Amino acid sequence: MANKKKSSKEMGTLAGQVLQDSNSSKIARTLAGSVVAQTNTKKQTSKEMEIIASNILTSEHYSKLTHKLAASVLAQSNSDN
Image (cartoon, rainbow, N blue to C red; front, side, top):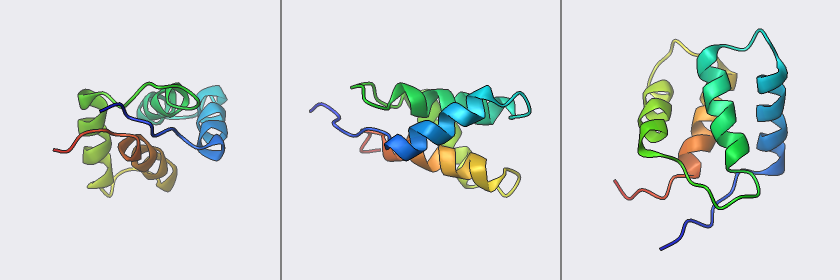
């Protein structure tokens, strides 16, 4: 079954801002790239990105922004695992 989930326009805008900010962390930029890739496309979260996002959400060591991006990436997942 095809994944019809997409990142919202708001999350796409936020992710774009993260990508343009040279002070953004590498992991935030990676997550932002995934969010942008899933905005208005049929692309879905890779298994690798699911694992990364899941690990971020279970850690206290990341910013609220990074957690928000990770949550968005996982929300676009088509995995039943």
